[in-house]
Image (cartoon, rainbow over all chains, first blue to last red; front, top):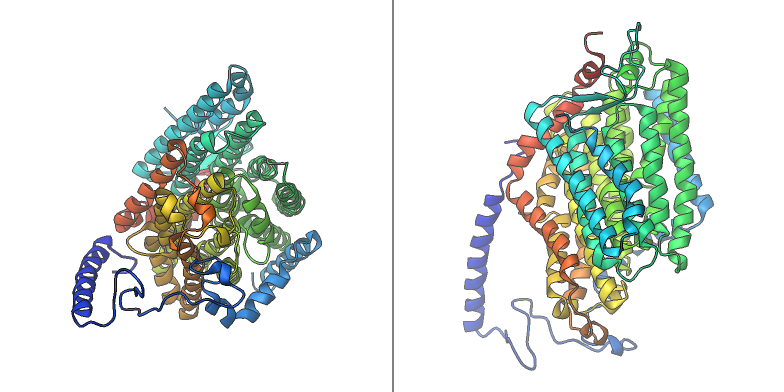
Length: 115
Length: 512
């Protein structure tokens, strides 16, 4: 039905998903795929991630997830867009006022022509 | 008994009595502020129940029984006019404001000048309540200014830091200019049609829609887009909201940009100009700004390392969803798609108020305990602040739109209606969500990472701060578990009442 969604559907899917994940984990452990829960060389389930590597000049961040380098791939991937957005946010009052005037001009133009 | 006037009288009483009660002592002042905001929540609950159960628009005339002048057939008095949308907004404002006051008791404990703080927080609540209740366009402007002036002062409340003062001054200067455009729009309408009553104005414009009215509408929409924090007039928001105390940030991002921005856009577009203007054009104008807001707001959130600034940009992004729903509601006026989009916008307005209030309270708790909001210094926070982290996870999951939380319920309506209206818009909404997810996953990874030395010193905040957060967590989960019931029982009827322009006009004008 249009506009319809029931939370219970998600609960069912979530429970089924948990069961499947548990079965997969048990299968992975038995198949000796390298998953280790504790100790040296512990790997995250199924992801196969290696231990933290020391990045030159970032030794002080070793073992920490920081706001700066998590998701760096995404940020780098569309870096130009972010640079453009950041450049526009100058913090200058004159720019804020200019954008307000541009917005009003755009709305006014659209309403006069098509309104 | 008509509870409508008490929605304004109670906070007004609180504002004037608080300095006197404060003479008794600090605890008395806090208790009085809590009592006043609690009583306001009580009367708004009753108001919401009354409007919801009868599905009738309530009208209250100040100083008389009827808004009509003696011997004339048109309204001359200030009216308050409350339909289901207004009642929902009033309840949401009172609910979040009550929790913000409760949270402030511990959060603001070490600050000075608290007698001003509690007065200003009640003034802010009063202004917002007035905006959503009034049926008079100049009265709306008065309440808008009450709200705005309280916001400027609260942003700069911690005047021992340059950040607060700079943000407060910028917000005040540019905000005043936006308010001036709104006032100019109102003045043009009054000059053209000779009335300030919204319902009568709608009737007059339907009969004769002039170029002056179009110019007035452009001024109003431009000024209100600014107040909503829509792109490209969002920059003040990213400066002001993080600078304020977190209890105030919760109200600014959760309530102020909605009561003083998107709600008024909806009211003006549907109830005042709905019978006159080309709704398709107006709808597409709002959709255009909504798409910009969705992308820029959420994308800018990804690259922030200041937690509160990230949340502020996220608010900009979420306003994009609300504007998208409203825009589609206008452009597809009279269709099922339009109705569902409007219902989704109203639903997301309420949900975002709750989610963002929670997230800012979490940021406040972190700042309160650690003295920093820099994500680079918060690695492993979950180890020492597990309850706060849990509250953040719920809030973040809800704002991303993860089922079965409330954010998904409202976003679902918006995705579905936008995809049916124009698949391109549906795709933009999904891209916005991808950025939103990236932004919050960064924070989650940071919180769940290996604890840093600084974080190891942190501890959970006290019960006075945790309790409001967990009430909001409960609301998010509860609203997510009954999405269809809320949507069908409250949000779709609210959208129908908003779209019933003649009903809004007739409630004031009667058979005239």
